[in-house]
Length: 416
Image 1 (tube, helix red, strand yellow):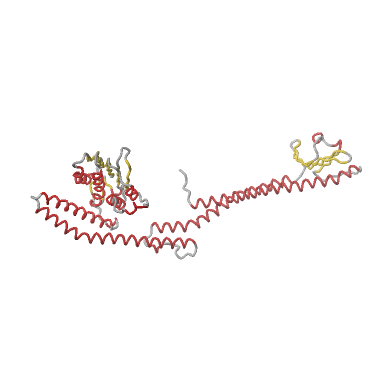
Image 2 (tube, one colour; image 1 turned 180 degrees about the vertical axis):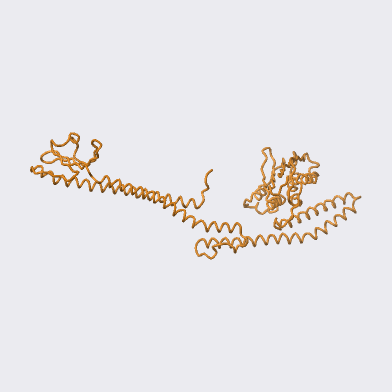
């Protein structure tokens, strides 16, 4: 499993890469400097020896060399050193590293040999120091990188944690800082305050509107019940009164659901509700929508589960899916399947419009379609209820045509 590319790790890696580049650069510079110094010191040393020894040898004077230096001339040159072109070079003879200067004067060829040069030892020491510095710089880069990353990331992590678990936007840290972190914290605080105010206004508006609608809906429902009772023997009036009564009851149920959604989930009581029984009731309640059409409404149930949630919310969320499928499917089938904590509704209808699909997927709309805000209110309410209950809500297209809706309730709400 790959380690996550955290910001702290990225900063540490950046310091490490910088240290590697710096080490590589200084290593190249050190190598060039060592080679340059070697050429200058060794070559000049051998050249100065040749300049001093050659005239003395030609003049027949004794040539006494310091320890480690040998001056060969003419026949005294060893066979292993004869025939070399004039130049300064390194040569290994019988396992011994030699520094040579091959030249020629008026009396013939000569070779200056440095058998005991300290420069090789100095060169090894220099390269050892460079290697030690290389390793030390890498370790130092890791330490400084981790320290800097921790100092940089810790305020961001604290701010993120405060935003995630805040009780109030004023509780955010770093608000008094004058640096970029203070600007970020204040921007978070202002944005959070604005969103909280908007959500509070929306919740209060939904609750106020729902409360205001309850009274007229109660009056309409009561009047429709009386009208339906008194027109029992008058089919031309009884049927319209029944439709009014059903519509009033559905509207009242919607208002009750909106009132519940306006409250925080933890403030709503959640009685245990058998899921399969509730779905079965919703299927039977919507079965008349398929009458008169070549549409088969079927239900299959699997493992029984009990959901800790208000039955009004569950009935509205699932009933909207079944009602939409029955209304818009002109032929074919509507199949409802319940298994454990999941419910699926599949139909062979024309599918959902692009505007509704965009809203269900939280996609932005543009153009004339953006004005049709009332399209798909039932599905939007289902999605809102699923979010309220922390349930997963998915919409997919069936390969053979039609739409499939899936609701999966979370484990903490489910009792098998």
